[in-house]
Image 1: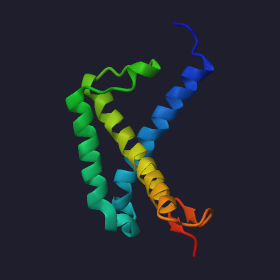
Image 2 (image 1 turned 120 degrees about the horizontal axis):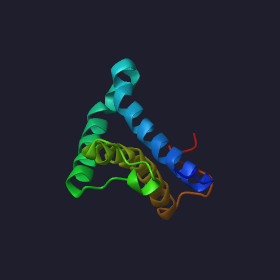
Image 3 (image 1 turned 45 degrees about the vertical axis):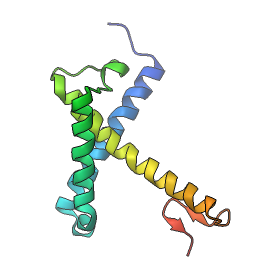
Length: 115
């Protein structure tokens, strides 16, 4: 087996960190009561992300040189990766919408206008 290049290692770390973030976001409401208000949204997003990746057989792990032994597990974890990526896209689209609607530059952040 050849040693991995730096690009391959960084790609693996990026994919794995996204999956771990997705898992933590789903589990967090179990131990943190303050996070339970959006629990249904997170569960629904996880079900859709995992379901779509399983149905379409989308698996990011072979692409980064890390195929998993369990065939469907790669697709399920890729769905969780999509869950964490969806939050980034949603926040970015919200910022662009606020800017388009005339918000002053610098007054818009990922969580909304500065107070």
